[in-house]
Length: 260
Image (cartoon, rainbow, N blue to C red; front, side):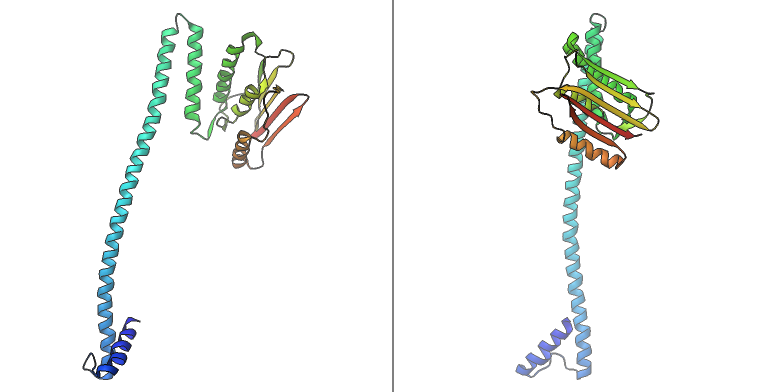
């Protein structure tokens, strides 16, 4: 393409004005010379251009790699900082537990439970699955603090059926339902206690909750938390789970069943 353009420019257009060829050869040799000469100069120009282009790209990529290394180091530093803070908190709580164990065992036990709660939330949220027995312990510790708060006015019953061992379930999937009971329900009425029932069979896990509706709280059956739970269940189990919420006689009921 370049040779054709050059030949047309120099041997046709310019020749009509100056009546002199650029090369003193016959017509056949002239065309071949133009082709070779143009290829030679084009190749040199392309080679130099390519070298310059790749040099620029090299420096550009070098800067990007350097920036990525800096970002990676910052991410590692942030991760380290996020790990140091919980470690400091857990060590502090552990020191309180040791100091209070002999003279105030009940307070020491509460501190230990709190530490276990925080530890579970901190580390299990980074995992897709956890053991059912660990989740049950977490739920019992969670309920314990409400029981301490309400004392004799605490009316919530936790029922666990089946053999609880090393079954794996989605991390923190059950606490969503327990939390809703305490956040939106009435838990201090003896005549209408809240009931949380967890059942484990060979193939399925079921959780059902029933609690009196707190009229001062607005129930959101399809709130953000519920929608996130549904999306997570759909990704994990597709259509092999059951999830429903309903209001019945001033009571709110939630139910979930999924395979293990």
